[in-house]
Length: 401
Image (cartoon, rainbow, N blue to C red; front, top):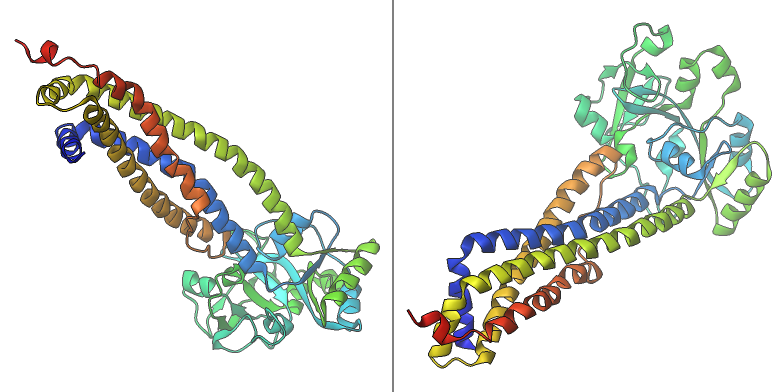
């Protein structure tokens, strides 16, 4: 066994070029099988963490997914507005802990300007927890066109407490040739939020009256809101409020957790299909290993003949081929695992920047790792024909001149 091991190492060293190609093929197959599910789980965990502070979302009737993506993550166009009295009714209802109005429609350098109230900053993960959104600098807004900005906005736009900036109409950054006087009226930064890793890091928060004023006399008169972030004194109150809102024709109530659960089901279906593709990729890698083993088997015939002439049995020769294959595949799988973690980390950071919330570091579970480790027995099985062929090599045929 020891002889076979050291002979396998020497053989691999002499075939360094072919070894590197095979190891790289196995590593790429391993990384391909793991990267997408790892990044998907990062997005899933990051989205849930970013929205866990919000109990119930009340918006105009339409798609629940669109409501969550637009109002909580600022990644979609809002469905529409709801009458102000819907918000007022929720706020004044018995058992209400907190009702926070949200109004969207403008942006600053691509960052959404969110009209709200100071109750926004009193939201908590649980009643006994401190406020989720904490000021790093300055103070909360007090008057129209005051603004509390997220950490990412402050960093990207180089804004400080006391800085001023001008917003623009619409939800995306664009060059406008003409803006009305209200849109050209500057905002003044009164506070900067501590980073949360969530979408509010890229938001500009201002009194909701500012949004109404900016959009003209009619908007100021109607005082419509895009959504209401609602929290009751107890869980039963949240469900009761959701039923009451959904029974009306003016608005709908959405549980962000349910939206994520539905999205997760769709994601799991896609991951199941990707798992099938991963098996195919790993199978191709196994065939690559088989081809490499077969090619090296032709090259090692003289070495095998010499070992047989020195007294090595068929079992030693058989073990030699499997050891070479096993070492090659193990190296490739280990490199692939490292590559998958690296790509998932870099890709997760880039995707998090794009989505506007921080993704958790990639986590390699045993269930995912087992996909890659499956390549080791596959590679050994692929090497069996060559290993059996090596045991039949005749010393007389390859050592006689």
